[in-house]
Image (cartoon, rainbow, N blue to C red; front, side, top):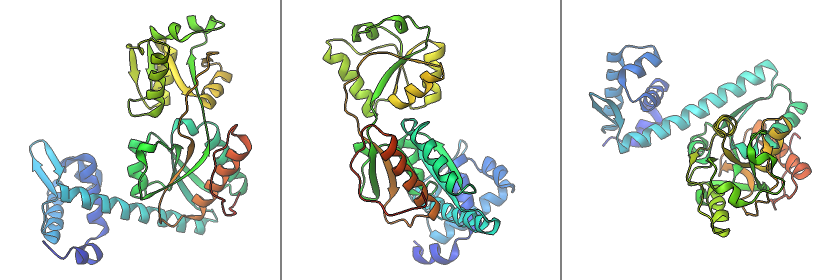
Amino acid sequence: MADIDRVLRSNLKLRHLQLLVALDQFRHLGRAAEFLSVTQPAVSKTLAEIERMFGLNLFVRSTRGTEPTAYGLTVVRFARSVLADYARTQDEIAAVASGGAGRVAVGAMVVATPGPLVQAVQLLKQRSALTTVLVEEGDLTRLLPRLRVGELDLFVGRLEPGYASPDLETEALYREPMAIVVRPDHALAGIAKPHWRDLAGQPWVVPPPWASSRIKLEQQFYKHRLAPPADIVETASFLVTLSFVRERPAVGFLAQGVAQHYAREGLVKVLPLKVPIELPPVGIITLRNRVRTPAAAALMECLRQVAASDAPAPAPRPRAAKGAC
């Protein structure tokens, strides 16, 4: 094995890192070559060069493509982190040169949009119109890895306790209950006082099994001595949820703020049924000890202000320093 410190500090070039990330993304020499606009022999040659530097096999080649080894996964994670820092620095320099005010990348669960996050971005834009905000929607399983390698500056969503980790800092902002929705012309929409037994036999679109809201939903059926719905579609995507609620039609389970927003748009009807469940608060997750850019710090302060002014039940949070908002 080579001197890893020397390889990481001196030998690896930007093109090496880009190649490693492309190979991990496409898992195929030819497709990686096409993406990088080079020939496949050039990709093979560069990968062999990188592996000689480390004295390790980073990828296993086969007729089906390429798969990273355990060593390869570690080096790819390093490559993604460096490239994310490179892109962030490049964006910030370009923003300063153009008179802008930087860029912030935020991952968000549906529970945080369209209300608090949109309002926070609007507040940020009032103070700094040229600040660019990149929003990636998804769940913790998809977005936390991107936060860890630096592709995202912060995450906004439910602070699921199962994802707590020493490398992450969490800040609770407010609590958001759940609501049950159907499309406006659904048979259940005309019932003045629906009961859980009315819902048990309906087709549903529900959160994935790992979500605390899914577990709590099933507990409500058990509490009323009913079996949870068997005809289900599982998804963490709001667009998928809305599509099945509208087209199937299915019963949906949404954060109350999201449900009320789309009810005002005429897309769903919120059923007048109390959903007495306790869920983790909505808040911010950042990577511990990472220096925050001014744009990221400003957006976080805007999120705090929106949560303090609009959320019905703010969660305790540490005293925040003054920011751009």
